[in-house]
Image 1 (tube, one colour):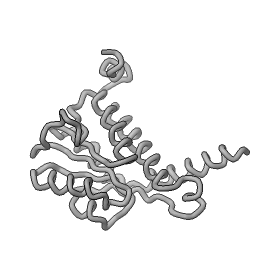
Image 2 (tube, rainbow, N blue to C red; image 1 turned 90 degrees about the vertical axis):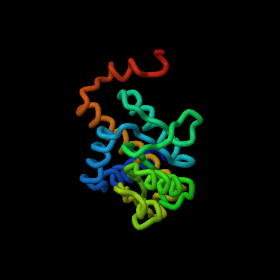
Image 3 (cartoon, helix red, strand yellow; image 1 turned 30 degrees about the vertical axis):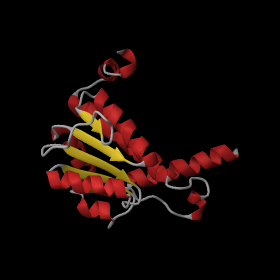
Length: 182
């Protein structure tokens, strides 16, 4: 097996473990929150933010009213909205501050993190914890939160699949909402 394949296998095993660690009730709360929210707001910083943007795009393609916090056209978060926040450490100041503001306004706040008992989990209504393997064997091939970011993307892709099923959306429906076809 090549070094690339060995690295890939280590990352995949770690991601499978992290996604598999998600509490089913918390996952279901996210899905229900997305379906019931008037609008969905997503935010993360850095690479977690990029994962959040990928998720937001898929939700838009499902026909939902979704915004990424910090964009110039993003409206204000409201009382009947859902705010989904992503931070591996649960301590990223801009993410925690967004959670505090959204909560104060009355939005439901759900976070995805790798750290329980963090400032972000303390302010969130629901905390989805990905139990990311932390050994040196993982850090040496996937540094600086890579497994969290990859696992979060895979988790969100699984959520999109469930949302497709619950809303009756097909890939064709989503393709028709894909920006490239406009």
